[in-house]
Image (cartoon, rainbow, N blue to C red; front, side):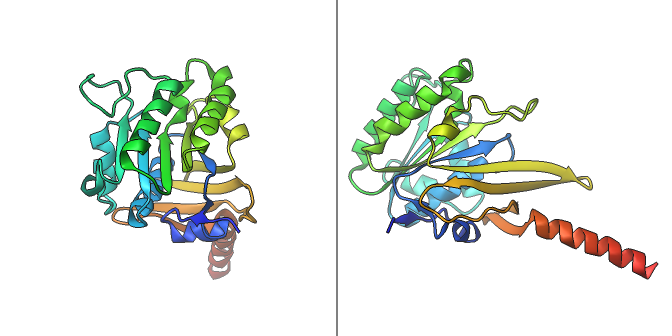
Length: 251
């Protein structure tokens, strides 16, 4: 029976038989602002809570921003920094920073991740790459090759990995479909404006070795807690219809 790693979101873990199977590479896909980074931070925070080694590669925010954002939800990355977690900053900072990338290439990133794992030591490890899309934005046809390279090389280092795959706002299409083909699991994030309100949704589209839930779930991002699943889109629709019917009968 596969060992499963909690995401730190109890309501979500129930959808995937208790957590992500150890050793899997799972793609988090969707437009910006849909909750992918908060999900990744929760997964990392849960790892620290359980004593796992954690490595977080950030290509779109600074290290300081990642640590600060985590603190908004009660996750103290600063306390564990360079002891149980290393945040690799891929924003091409000054060369004196040990955990920054000199080049934005998958080879440089993988090399730095392995160095971080060796520094932190042996044990179960969690890895987040937020986002992997940054390595093939200018060459989307390379997405599958790069994704496979990352998975193949890092698998032997006992990582359970989340890779963020960004979608373009203008087309709602992924920057290269290779991530989803290679990944062991796919969690898709969506957002819609309904009645003038932003609503976020997620669905587990794929999770190998798992009898996973197949519903689209509405969720909220709550300060001090993180992601909380509320109800399925079908439940929302049913309640909306019942509400309209109730208003008509009253009138």
